[in-house]
Structure formats: structure tokens, C-alpha cells
View 1 (tube, rainbow, N blue to C red):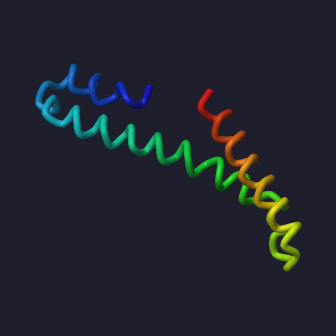
View 2 (cartoon, rainbow, N blue to C red; view 1 turned 180 degrees about the vertical axis):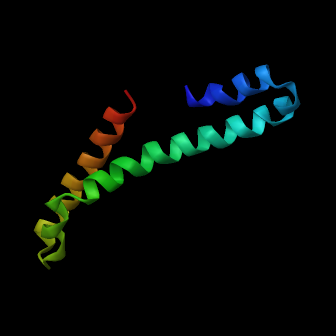
Length: 80
């Protein structure tokens, strides 16, 4: 929906037609970045990272695996 807005504006006001490509590219970049950053922030606010603070290498590896799997699963679910 958001990607089509520049084309709709250019359709109603032809003087903005020259900006359609760059505006669409900027919106797409914003959508892609937010779809990657949002899951990271959502998982980052959970309590899973507290175990990583402790200096136990076994817990750190386990925590990192859980953290990465949560990021990937949240990212994949946000793409649906």
C-alpha cells in the first residue's frame, strides 16, 4: 500500500510524476529496514539476553542460539 502512494499522487497531480521513482525507492528502503530492525528490537527487549551477561561460555552459546532463532522466527513471521 505505501509503495503505491507516490504513483497515486503523481496520477492526481502530474507535476509530481518526476519524483515517483525516487519516492518509491525511499519508501521501499524504509519498509525493508523496518522489517529487519523491528524484530531485532522486539526480541532485544525480552529477558533472554540477561543470561548472556553472565560469564559462563556454555550459557552464552545457548543464549546466542536462542536469541538468533527468535530474531529469525520473528523476522519470518513479520514477512507474512
